[in-house]
Image (cartoon, rainbow, N blue to C red; front, top):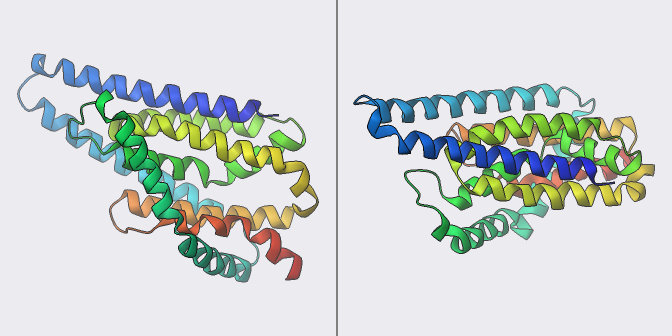
Length: 244
């Protein structure tokens, strides 16, 4: 039942560790490179991350077009923001990231990379809020069809190499978040099945994609949206589609 999620988590773990290895090798052999190579490497890392952020934005925008009822999307975002803010999910997520950092900071030297907490939170949000995470986990739990999550694993694995190189060890820990998040959806899939028609999934995809757009704006440094506080919005179309 959880085969697709296990593969997805493994792909993120392997990809992030590979990215960290590439960064370590680049730093280890930097003394053998011509003067100015370190600065060039940092510039390349920055432009690559910006390029990835733009790709994330593209995925979000294209997913937003799946929705057919803008009122449901608006209400989901407003009510989801209210729930998330009252629960302060962003603070809880970052507290978890800080806890992970305190337990693991002795394992790495920062070397100018982002904190473990930042890497964990950013990667967890990116890998969890997308439509493929929800739809794939549902398929995995309902029919045993792993194809969507296998495709997601390939995408996440490639992305995690870039994120692992730029954001460090925290990205590897996002594999645990994926395991818990997608695994929970798969296990609850049989209970949710009666409420998950095509219209509901389309609206969930739309709302989740809006969060991906918000995340991409944060990655570009244009905004500081508390995306985690908006995550409850993804599941509200299940209720709203029943009454609208």
